[in-house]
Length: 223
Ligand SMILES: Nc1ncnc2c1ncn2[C@@H]1O[C@H](COP(=O)(O)OP(=O)(O)OP(=O)(O)O)[C@@H](O)[C@H]1O
Image 1 (cartoon, rainbow, N blue to C red):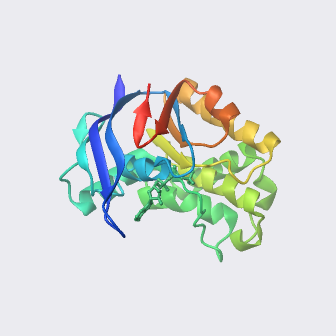
Image 2: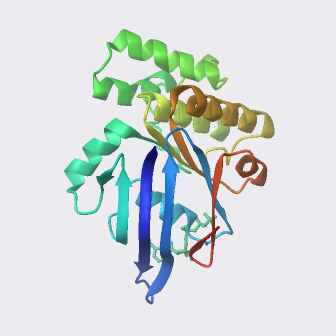
């Protein structure tokens, strides 16, 4: 089953001159598939992920998630859809620096209010443990190293069991040991929970081990 279908995506930037950054891209991503988006610096990986995440609505073509067309929906509708179905890990972590690590991970779960605060806390702690940062749980997020913050941001992205996890270089600040831990966790979530991973990466090793690679070059998808 396809969880995401992109058809004839075209995207232009207009600053300083008109620039055709994404050219007629079409592809499908299946449920539970571990997809890497690769390509040289400047090839459009982050731009494409931003579109797929529904955060950028300025493009031509169609993006369907769970069979639902994302084009033409209001920002409010899209925000609600993202809250329910998509977890993000950005290059910058956007943790709330004055809140504890545990609180940062719990917040999207508390906002969703599907589980009790106690259950959300238990889940947050379990995720921090899987990512090897449970000993930082009660520290203020601002005090953590870049790599620790990245792992906390990954835990936060996973707290609501999203259908799709999207990451822009989610292991960019991690050493090889922690990159392997994150990769194995993503792989397990894809295989056991059917969660779909869409990950922008420079790491050929990481991409080589994924189920599906979308390789960008000259603004196009190479097959
Ligand atoms: N807001 C913008 N306005 C104009 N050009 C932009 C804008 N954002 C990105 N670009 C250009 O679009 C191209 C693709 O950028 P993008 O950040 O998607 O590449 P990338 O493959 O993710 O690169 P990297 O691997 O270096 O992060 C680049 O040439 C970039 O300069």
